[in-house]
Length: 333
Ligand code: MG
Image 1 (cartoon, helix red, strand yellow):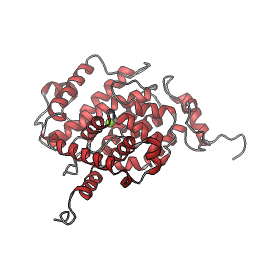
Image 2: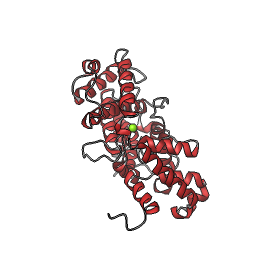
Image 3: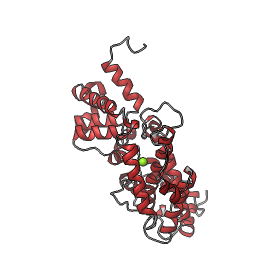
Image 4: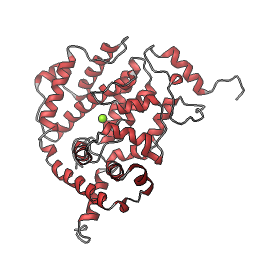
């Protein structure tokens, strides 16, 4: 390539200025990475981050981590991986309509739940109780900053900020991060309704929500996305409208009361919590079995055991538990 010829990345970076809204985060203005690296000739920094996340081991493990239903028997229930993909698609649609940076949005969405424990929020609760503080969004950041590949993925500041702040109570520094936050809620409320109906946890959706959002899964998501786009267009924030927001919150509350807490979808959570507790105790007392000497020295026992258990898939946690606590010979019967 001649000296004056632009790389594909530079062409793309320039296009962002003409194509994207003034509120979009431009890749060439990124605050950068912790460790400087040579820019890619083809991809912008955010597109590169998206690829780094997609190709990492923690991402593949999401396939076998619980979303809401613990180790579901049916093949049609969501897992943490399909949840992540649904969040990503919703967020990209919103970002594209608002002419925000779709690469940044996708990178944040694909990375936002990498720190989720096995057995969903049951695992998170136990680790929080045992260590005094554990939150999956902070662990997601730890995965991409420290744990993956032993030195983190060296992502840009904006992607890391969006991953850390995808919780409702936190405010990301970019609109793309805010888009992922609202898309996370739209995704889980809708797919958890779908899964709860499939599992007969709820038999129907109250009529006020059907009337407001629509009578099919697709229409409901579309209604919410459309509302976010039209309420946020041309603004320096991401919003739902004054009509939709309170009803959406009420629907979330309905899900918390009827699905997330105390329903039969949660009946195995006590067992899952006990399993995580047992694993934690075992590895806390036998750290040599983790074989992570460098980490033990660097981060201490509690953090190392926490990282090890948080990274497990549901089925790996069960397998390790069986290896430790179930007498050999029983396993096959
Ligand atoms: Mg999520």
